Image (cartoon, rainbow, N blue to C red; front, side, top):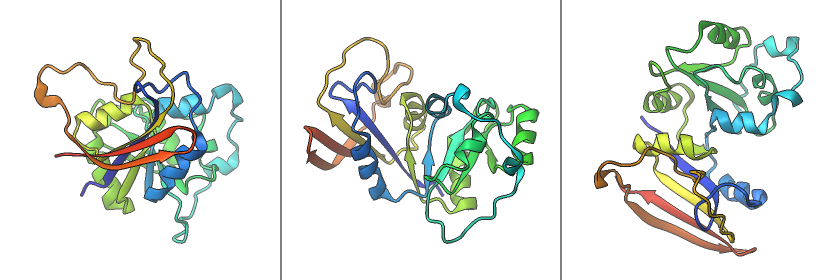
Length: 225
C-alpha cells in the first residue's frame, strides 16, 4: 500500500524557491501538523544543507547498531542516494534530533562499495529500481516494512517533479511569501521535462487557504486522481 504523500514548499508569489528569505519557523510549524511518519528529502537538498568541509570524520560510534525505540515518535528520514554521494554526512544525520533513524533508497545499479558502507554502519536501506530509484516500489516498502502511512517531502523541484509525474503525490502545500523573484532558470517547486500532451497537466482541488502574519498565504491542494 502506498502512504499519503505531501509536498510542502516555501515559494515566492511567482513560484520560485530561491533568492528570498523564507520564514523557516512558520514553514516547519505548519509541517508539524501532518505528524508525518517519514520525511523524504532529496540528496541534493541534504548535500546543500551539510557541506562536506564542515563535517567531522565518523568514529567507532558510527559502526554501532542502533536499537529501535518503539516509544520514539519522530519521523524517519528517507533519502534517495543510488549513486552513493552521501557517505560523508550519514553519520551526522543519524545524530540529528529531528528524526529517529534514516533509511537510504538505492537501486540495483548502486555501487557495491556503497552498499557495504551502509551495511557496516547498520544503516537501513531499501533497494528499488534498476538504474534509478523506483519511488513507487520504495514507498510501498516503507509502508510494508516500517509502517509509514504519511510522508512529507522536504525537497526541491527535482524530487517533487519525479514524484508528481509518477502520480505518487496526494497533496501539495505551498507557503507563499510576499516576493517576486523573476528569472528564467527553472528553480521552482516542480521541475520536470516539458509536456508533449495536455493530458499530463495535473488537476488540483483546493482543500485549504490560510492568511498568516507577515503577509504569508498558505494554500493546500489535493491531487485529483
